[in-house]
Length: 183
Image (cartoon, rainbow, N blue to C red; front, top):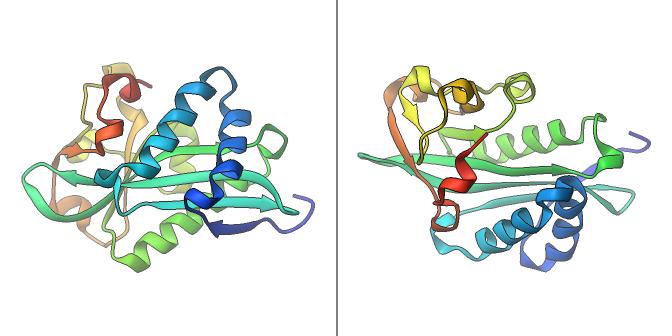
């Protein structure tokens, strides 16, 4: 990175910057991801959310969104889902995604969040403390093909939380579609 990347919280007023990053990062899937992000920002079942924007010299460089999830049979668990994480192509492989993940997890831990889930590339997310969720008894809202089970991951922010619970997560209404649960 040329200069220090700044990370700030954003909401709907930063939507234009968020969408620039999402469009650039997801290219062929941009239309679907942009609609999903817009929908999640307005989805009351996703609340509370955490939306962070990385800026490189005031230029949008990355975005991460965390939305609230629940565990079946465990209403008392404070858990979140990381989706999506986007980094502008010219800023990829420079640590921007990792900074967004670390800052997001730090803020969520301060809020008292116990567990964070993600469906993504195991080689990437395990570098940031995530581990496969299936072996711990956590399942996604929709079936994930067995060959992709390692892509369904979890990170505990409260010591021992992974062992205290198990079950299927209930995600925000706008994410509750099978098409979002393929890896």
